[in-house]
Amino acid sequence: MTEKISVIKRMFSRYFVFILCALAFSGWHMLPATAQVPGFDGGGSEVREAIGGTEGGGIRDLFGKDRPTARVDNVRDLDDFKIVDEDSFLKYTAEIHEVPYGDTSLSYRLRLPRTWTKVTQYAEHGITVQQRLMSHITTFVAPPFASVVPSVTIQAMELQHEIDARHWLKNYLLLNGFTVTGEVRGDDLRQANADFVYVRDESAYAGYARAIFHGNMVTLVRFDVPQRFVRHYEFLQKRAVDSLTMVFPKSGAIEEWRRDNLLGEVLEMQYPMSWPRKRARYNEDGLKVSFELHNEAILEGKVNGLIWLSVIRRTSEMDLKSELEVFRREFERRYGFQINEIISSEPSYGPLEFDYIREEHYKVGPDRHTSSQELRFLVMADSKWYIFIYMLSPPEQTDYYNWARNLRAFEIIKDSML
Image (cartoon, rainbow, N blue to C red; front, side):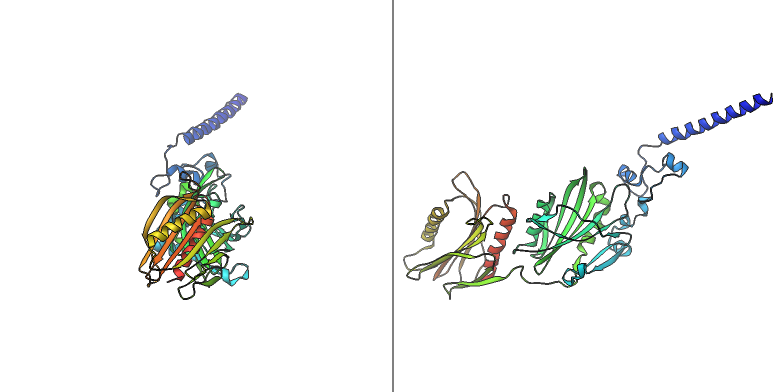
C-alpha cells in the first residue's frame, strides 16, 4: 500500500510539472501581437525588435537566464531617445574636445550623449575621394540595442583643388555609394550639410553629414542611424552634427592663385595655380588678345575642362552682334562642337565700368543631336572693349567632380574682376 501511494505521488508530481510548463508555453504564445513599448506612438514592432521582445517577455525572461548584457534593456532608458529639443540636448550631452594626432589644425569640438563611447579601432573601408583615402579621425558609438548601433564618424583629408564645399560633399557621398536625399545645403563656400541613405549588410541606414573647410583641409562628420529608428534620432542627429566646430578655424584659399591681366590696363583677374595658361594669342595691331586656362587630365594632351578669355578693342566698324557671330564660328571650328540648346540667359555681375554684362548657359556637342559638354559664356561690353569669357566642361551628370572644379574656377575669375 505504501509503495502504491509513493508511485501515485511521483506520477502526480510529473504531471503537475508538465501542466505548469504547458501553461507557461501557451501563455507566452498568446501575448498580443501588437504589444508596444509605452511612450512610443507607432513603430512598436521596431522598438520591440530593438529590445528583444514584447512587454510580456519570453521563456528566458521567466527563468531569468541568457539575458543579453551588451544592449539596452529598455529603450525608454536610452538617453538618445530623450533628446527631442535644445534643453534635453544640453541635458543629456557633453562637449568633446580632441586634438587628433596632436595636430592642432584638426582640433575640434562636438557634443554627443554622455553614454556614447569612443571606438579607437573603427575604420570604415572604401571611403575615397578622387582615388585618395580620407584619414579616419575617430568614431563614437551609442549603447547598442539588438543589432542597432548608431555611430558618429569623423574624417579629414587635404584638399587638392578649389571647389565649393557643397559640391565636394555631394561628390564624396556619390563616390561612396550613398544616395543624397534633398539638396546639399551650405551657408557659404566653406561648409555644407546633406542628408543621405544607403544599404549595408542588407540593412537600410539614414545619415546626416557636415563638411567644414579650414585652409586646404576638410573635416567631415557623419551621424549614421538605422533607417527604422531615424525618427527617434531626428533632433539629436542633426543637432550633434551641427555642433561640430574647428577650434582653430583657418580661412584662405585651398590652393594658391595666380594674378594676371588682359591687355594690362583693361582688366586684372585671378585664377587657381592648378590651371596653367595655354594658347595665348595676340593680334598684331593690339586690338585683340586671348588665352586658355586648362584643367589638365592625367593623360597627356587631354583636358577635363578649359576656360577661354578674350579682350577685343572696339572700333567704329564693330558691333556686339557681329562679334558674337564671329565667336560662334571660331568656337565651332576650334573644338568641333556645335551649340545645340540654350539652358539659361540672364544678366550677370562684373566691373562697374561695363554697362552690358550677360551670362548664358548652353549644351554643346559634336552635332546638332548630341550634347556632350556644357558651355558657360560671359559677355561684358562698354564703349571701348568687348570681353568674352567661357567655360567648357563635362556636364554635371557625366563627371561631377571636374564639373564642380571647373565651375569654381570660372566663378573665381568672375569674382576677382570686381
